[in-house]
Image: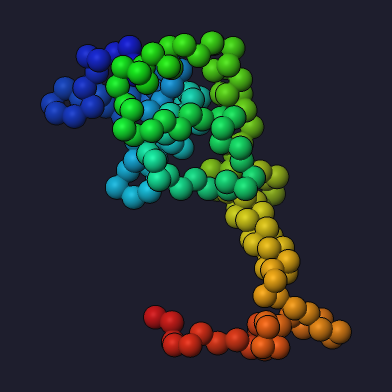
Length: 170
């Protein structure tokens, strides 16, 4: 995308979806600006087309941050520094480094695919890992206690499975 300023992404001459993805497949880097929320589909598309995602959002929320080292598969760039300095930085990265980032991205992209439970790596597996991690954190918390009968209680000795929210949930 950096070498093709003539490409149109809006207006009557904009690229069609198929042409857009074909162009991305030829790119080394895919820009992933902030979307309407704290995440963007362009980040995930970059792993499908195999380019290095360049995250242009200072407050991005990425999934499975405890399992995936995003510094090895993407670049996060300050949104206040977008311009010539970004282009020069991307041009300075050796092809071997880019290929390594893309290869490592291939290893984890399965985490963004909802596949059958039989697959060893899928979004479902990633969600289960996160839940297991939170359960471990919960049990290791200074506010969690357990008794001889296996019940898990809080500091007031109230069992967590008997806890009710202070107001009804919507």
